[in-house]
Image 1 (cartoon, one colour):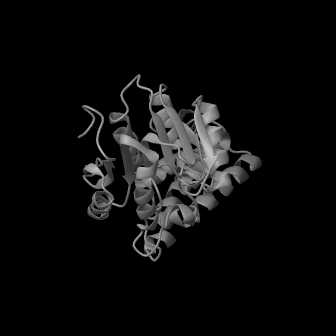
Image 2 (cartoon, rainbow, N blue to C red):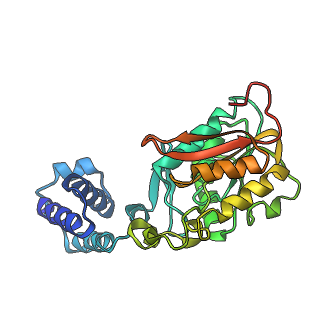
Image 3 (tube, rainbow, N blue to C red):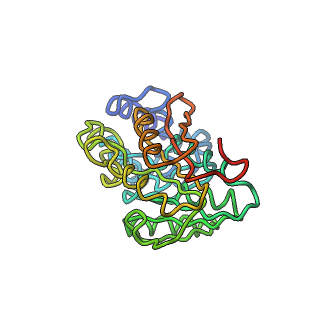
Length: 288
């Protein structure tokens, strides 16, 4: 019966991935619903149904991949972010709830109805750039990434969600010439190359180039900060997501590069996860 398969799957997930029972049950339901092409409510109403051999094979294949540690988002091919569903593949980072703070901080600096030029560096799945374009349709949003595969995913998400985002292949700002923006946002790689977490959990399956950046994890952040003034309008903002123990270092780098109104914002867990500053001088009323 379906109920027996779900109970067995939840137990296996709890044991293999050290998940709390409730989380293991939820993951089992999500995997089975996806494999069977139904919703979770259907599982409850059909818990005494017998699975066909084909159905059993399908859900067991998904379960085995998850038991090996493959992230649920990659198994489903999608992840929710800022109230929308984004396609994800192993070519891009999985959008995470803490990155919604980067979107929120950007929106605070993009007045509704105002025409602003916005750039995301390292677009990945497009979660940040697409969210900004949809929340502030008066803005012109561009996004760059060094990965052609990531740009393909971002363009697909922008198209599916009806967002006007210009996606460009670029290593940082290299392909932008003299273009300037009122706001630049980035969730760059910020994990130290030798960090043991890179070989644990979901990170094992995500693209390493989008995770690690040098001995202290700040190599790309240094590059982005140093070159940002040449691509920011006067008073334009640079906002960066970073590790929860890197805020002080990022604020120092911003100040050393001449940024004003330097600050850090905390996520719901109380960790400083986004830092930013304004170039040269702020537009009236926009400095914080």
